[in-house]
Each structure stands twice: as structure tokens, then as C-alpha cells.
Image (cartoon, rainbow, N blue to C red; front, top):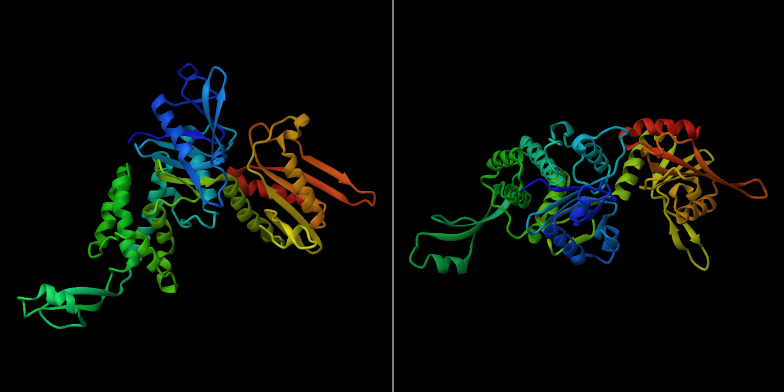
Length: 435
């Protein structure tokens, strides 16, 4: 399997060879482009998901032909024929990012902030980020978790064993005994409990290793899997994944398996971190960058501002746009900071603004309505919109929008740019701006 076809958020994919060298487009050969179009048409979501066209949009441009525009979902998908498309986030560094190594490093750091991302302790230094695609990196994270488990010792428990023994032990299984021992009167077909590592968590972990051994194209990952499988020699690999996952009970005694089971479900059940799935795809790991960015900023903001005595809450609940005759249209600002009598609302927006005041820098009018509602319902004039820094706006002078009531009260919406590569520095500067 070759190197994946690599694109970034908001890139446009075409199959018109006349525009192969045009920097505005990413060229894909006709066969794989048709497969991609078919994949998009068959892509489905559950009742809670947004339309698939929020991920990949099919359009048409004169002289160019069909164009697939990548939206703000990042990760890796693989078609049934093995062709892979890797979508990376569009992160500005102010300098060249050779082979997107810095982009992948920052993206992995951002992912660790997400509650449902099952790797909090992976060693970034040990990951061969320059040599692996995202899927191989995720495999490597899983292997690090397994290595940690093996180092601590895989757990055993009393599990039911069935065997045809020369002595009586446990409970006689009458039907099996009659069937197997009609002419072997000296044997007993019995069921008994034995203290053994063949517990459900280990069976699922072994099944995951075996599956990843077939999927990986990395020599390093393949070698690591072979070494780890030796620790599971006495364990049977799971064959009924859904049934075995239903038997997993995570508690204080099985805490070492919590992250492993999350990853195993991703790999064995083809679960992704989104609500999307597709019949033409054999593997998919997709992350909504809006959520990743929001989670990352919230995590870092709690560190920086929490140390200054601020109470920082994410996805704050309790306020509604309308309250009569009943509470309707809940308001959920990304971040609410409280200290003494002061309240500050901060909302993250994963969008690149442009240096054009005539179009309000590309800020959505709907977003401003939302900020105004926050101001009124939380009774605060301090509202901040947090956008990722890009090369065009990195050193832009402060942007603010103000509205004043006749009684002197009002609303101020400040725009601030966060450098996700140097987020600690960005938030320290924001702290100074907040006073």
C-alpha cells in the first residue's frame, strides 16, 4: 500500500489533468476520483449527525469540472480497494512545515485534550511522525498502551473452562459427556473455573493486535505487534466482538484496560470519533476540527486562567434564549469565566479570517447574533471570539465591535487570534489583555 493521498482542510480535489499543476487544486487520477465521488454519495450518518456534505462537498467549476471540497473534518479514510486519503488540519506556523511534520505533531497534541480520545499518555517523542500516516500513528499509540499493560502484567481472573478430563472436577456437562465419552468411560466432560489470563479484555486486545498486524504497513509497528503477541500466547483471540465488549466491566481493578478497550472498539468495530460511516470505507478515523480546537483551547485556558483564580467552565448550561412560557433554545457558550462579580464569555471558532474590514474580516453575522445573545443573557459586556491565527491575520491590530445602550451599558465583542502551535504564549498574552 502506497503513501496516502494527502490534503488539508478546505482544499479542492479535481481530476482534470489540465489543472494538475495549479496550486489552487489537488489533482487525483480519474479512477480514484470516481471512487471518492461514490464514497461521498454512499456516506451516511446517524440521527444526530450533520449532513455528509458538511465533510466533503461536491461542486462544479466551469472548465475545471467536478470539484470535491474538503470541509473541517480531519483524519484518514480508506476505500475498500486500499486507497487512502489523509486530511490534515490547516494550521499556520509562519514558516515552512516540511512534509507536514509540525502539523501532525500539533494535531496530535490537540487531540489529547478531547474527552473521547483514548490516548492521554502516549509518548510523542517515540512516534515516527515524519514516517507514518495518521492511521499508523494511531496504531502506534495503541501499541504503546499495550506495552504499558504488559509491563505492569496482564491480569488474570477466574474464567470458565470446559475440558474432557481423566478426573472429575467442577460440574459435569451431561450432554457433552454423553456425546464425547460414549466409549471413553474413564473421562469426564466438565466445566470449572480456573484462574487464567483468558479473560474478555485480553481476548479483545489480542484480536486487535492480530487485526492490526494485517492492516499495518509500518515495519516498526509490525515488529512491535509480533513482540507483544508473545505476551498473549495463552489467550484466545475474540471472535464475537460485540458480545465480548458487552461483557467488559471497567472498575478500579481493570483501570489499566480502560484506554485499551476504547481503542480496541475503534479498530475492531470500525468505530470512528464521528457519527459518520460509509459502506465503501473499510477504515475511517475522522475528527471535527471545530470540536478539537474548542477542547484544546478550553483545556489550556483552564490551566492559565485557573491559576489566576478564575472559575473556568466549558459548555456552560442553564441559560436559555427564551424563558416563557417555558425554557427554550439553550445557550451553550464554549467558555465562561467568572471571578468576583466579573463574567467573561469566550467562544472558539475554527475559521480563518481575512484582512478585509469591508466584509467584517469574514466573521459570520450569525456568530455575532450569538455573541449578542450571550451578552444579554449572561449580563456581561465582555465577549471574546477566539480564532486560530493565520499568516494573514497573525500581527493584525486588535479588532473589536461595540454597541452602547442609552444607559451606558452595552456589549463589546473582541476578536483574538490563538497560535495553536504556541498556545501557552497566546493565552498568556490574552490574560494580559483581559486585565
